[in-house]
Image (tube, rainbow, N blue to C red; front, top):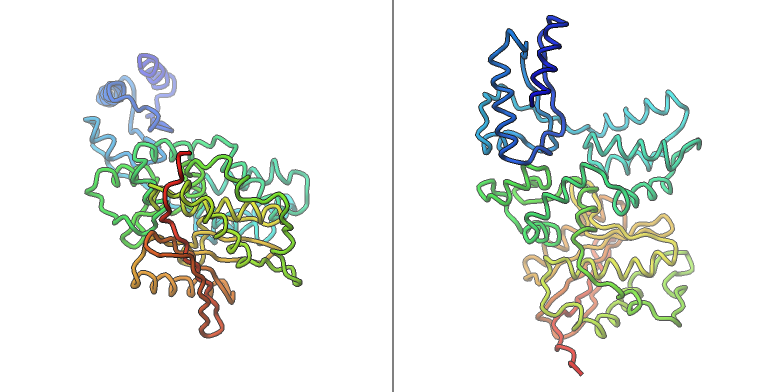
Length: 400
């Protein structure tokens, strides 16, 4: 702090100009005692304007600072709180077009859409994804493809230590139980800033207000949080895949994924492992969605496809989306719902199917009250709904 005084005094003496002090990553100064001391030192420097020439201070943070400053007895009168707006879709596309014009390297249109979708216009993430594609995944290549983007996305979720996402993770861990509920039981938590837990997550950019419900608005943040908070089911892949199984039976003659056949196999797996996987677990712990995600991924990735969690579709999001041979398969997941919610879920899925221009979708309902597994096919106006009821209440396995 004495160094700051000396530096500012020297700057004022040598330049004779007023100083604007900008402090980046201010949220890292997370020790209350040091923060208070530091802010009072800056205030004293500001009052001795003839000696130091300090005109104003700008504090920069990934989260909201107003509450932090108030909580730490800040001596500052905050003149203005500026929230850096996210890029619009047009601005993201314009940014990428500038690179294309200057270098001749082209982003595939699908890649532009994926950058926009996954970062949702968050400036740091938008630039980070584009930079990784240009400088690492597709360096020296003429066209940046979807394959390049898949590698970038994988690295961001599983390998990179990105300061934006690490900040989100560290804050989310402080309210783990609530965060799990928001992640794995969508639209179940009312957005109410008077709840200190919600206020904390909101001020630190983890969650947002989605039509009165708590949500994670940025898909890449959601994927990172999903990966971080997913339940432990290590070694389960060996129980899902049969050694002797011929995976070709899950692909039809037109190279389409036979998803219903895969779900039949899934019900067999749950019948044998449900008591181990689901006993004493709640939906908001993520065990149902992640279990299905891991099962489908185990098969579909061997066949050359992918499964993605929480994918944006128009104004909403689908729980899982399988991709195989350039075709999308939409999967919505619900647990322990009543008939009214069941009807809402069907309408919601139909809307997603229409927005994507598809003809069918899958609704998976986990229930601890049904007696047995069941499959229902509903068809209306050319749209098919494949509805699977998955039993979750099993007798505890014998200790023997």
